[in-house]
Image (cartoon, rainbow, N blue to C red):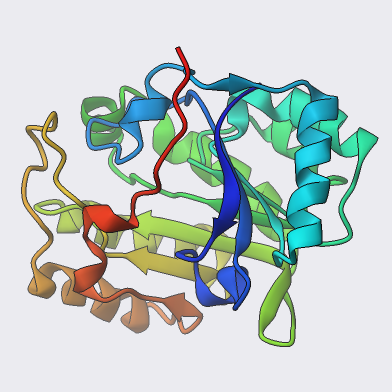
Length: 258
């Protein structure tokens, strides 16, 4: 497995980061090709330090000993089998979190259910053509919805001391100029999964130098329109962000080894 960062992370949703941080493992590579990816330095090609399951298991133990609230596998899809082997070697006594683009096979998610306590999937697109244009994945909406449905049905929300111990938080990044996609994404989620799901509506889009579209920051009115629609659809379990979160300072520093 190629890994670019192993460290506590404090910029996830509050019941995940808590006070001591989420123990994140940022993997190299990705099954998506998002034109606007903030982590393009590591997502486009798996450049970084290589870990065997045993070596990564040792790092999980170290993170656990540091007091993090959970183990957070970020962009893990391409290494799902090795992650299971890692957890077979050592399973921390804190929740295991699978932080994914949502572009997953149902059978892969079913195979992860015994290993993962918390799923943190994106639901990026309701528009097939937009998924093809911005992420090179024409079948994203139905693929992600099918996978997320398995997560939601098998991992009900469990909180303890204001921290999430089990469950699913579905993330959606509102893209500048594509409010219609976001409103339809909310509709797809509610129509398929019901209004009692937990959704994180994110405003943190940051224009990257290599991205032509979108190439500006999100307008407050765009974000407010999506939140308003989510509330109208009955989504009360919502996480939202300040517009000021759209800053490059929130992008972690990655370890790159050629």
